[in-house]
Image (tube, rainbow, N blue to C red):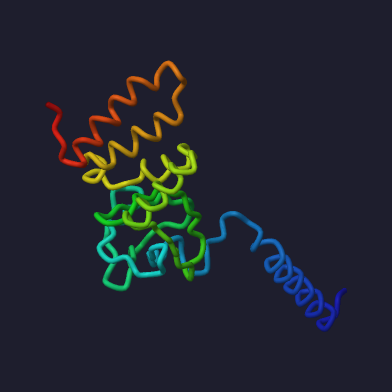
Amino acid sequence: MMNRATAIQERGLALLTALCLGVLVLPGCSSVRREHGSQAILRGMIYDYENRPVSGYAIGIHGGRKTATDISGRFSFPSVSFGKLEINGSGPSHLTESLVWNFDDRMQILYLRIPSVQWAWKEADELLGREKPAEAKQYLDRFPLDVREGAVWKLYEAIARYQLASADMRPSILEEIDRYNQEVLGVTKK
């Protein structure tokens, strides 16, 4: 027969073993929830390439949720689920942006640098001058829609296509370039 001291020791050992297993095994289980739940506030800041805050920049995440940056370039979305997020942005004086971001920590802040339209015009002009049309198109294709409808954008885009085109395609593109150039300069053909 077991004496009382031995029984207490065995129960204590069993309890200690169960406690140790719980500490070692449970944190590795996939069913364990995050310390602060599965959602948090997504916060971010948008700056341009001159390190100025971008105000009024529209930010959207999956599910159609939208907000805009404040005067300091800050934005936030309450109750965002952790995981990969598709983030899209646009603004009247800055290029559009699309990216996938892994939101996995409630303390994360998303910092984005977005080129202004003015900066992108200079960059596209320089790239086309160095005959790097593919790089220039990476900027041109991200201009806001209202800018892309203008003659200046169409001229730059036609120049990029001309530089990328084969010799047999260049004459028709050159006619487009001439037409957009005249429109930009306000010249009419007689």
